[in-house]
Amino acid sequence: MESIGLNMGNWEMSGTLSAILFIAANAYYPARVIARNNVSTIVDSSLFFENYLKIHIILNLLGVLVALFHGHFADENNIILQISLLLTLGLTVNGWLMYYSIPEGDERREPVIQLQRVMFIAWILVLIIGHSTL
Ligand code: HEM
Image (tube, rainbow, N blue to C red):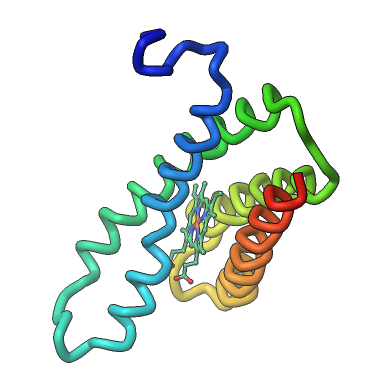
């Protein structure tokens, strides 16, 4: 394990790992936008997105765990990165709400999905700014 840099003491790996998990999980979002704008070429994408949503959830939950580990063991920190961690938890709770509590077609879903999009953009900005000011 040591030779490939995967020992538990090497927390630096956890930042890269959580980034890879989040990127794979949230490519869901641009993929959905592309599909929405290309209905003529993608005839039945609903099954694909049903499956990708499960991947989105599993990889995001793993990403959150690794990110918590990463934040806990990092030896530098700042308020902006603490805000990013709060946004990560907010995205998780809001995603959970959409999946388990608000069925498709329910009018309460629209504000929740809009909030998710806004938090998502803010999360990316805050992550970049927070890391670049370390
Ligand atoms: C850090 C964690 C997460 C991030 C960054 C994230 C990000 C996003 C984004 C950007 C969207 C908007 C997609 C769109 O507009 O079509 C979305 C949708 C969604 N997310 Fe997540 N999410 C996270 C965690 C979760 C979790 C933990 C769950 C469920 C347990 C979840 C379930 C959903 C559902 C059900 C949707 C709506 C899908 C749809 O109707 O197309 N998300 N998420």
